[in-house]
Amino acid sequence: MNMRNVVSIVALGTLAGAAVTGCSSDDHPVRNTAAVSSNATNPVPTKIANEPKVRKNVALTKCAEIPGGWSAEGTATNPGKKPVTYKITVHFTTRQATTLDYAEALVPVAPGKTVPWAAEKEFHAEKKMLCPTPGISEVSS
Image: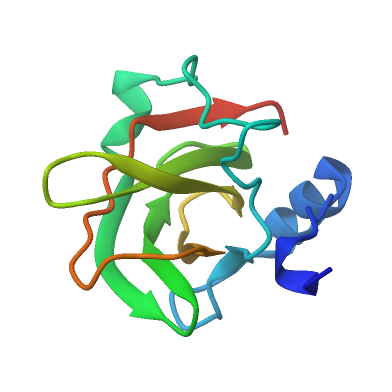
């Protein structure tokens, strides 16, 4: 099995600890490169946590092809006084809005900081794809 298709599980405590130590926009994006595949046994989720008030803190800045799939990148900002972890769900869709696959990223952000994030997935993509983010939420830190 390709390692990029194995789901990476990272303890939120570790992520929150990393957020407390602080990050800058110069740091490497937090990547969840092994998102869950959309197939018959694990389809694209239909119920996705989404918090409109949190969306303003997450920006999508890049939607691009990667070898064997597609990637979305952006930044996440924490305007608060406590560390937060954002869960970002990205759908990789055709230009006609058909979802071919998806990826999720857990992004820890220290208070007052902005960090880069990325979510990518290996799948058979079309030449031109879109990267809508139907789910952006804050998870417990």
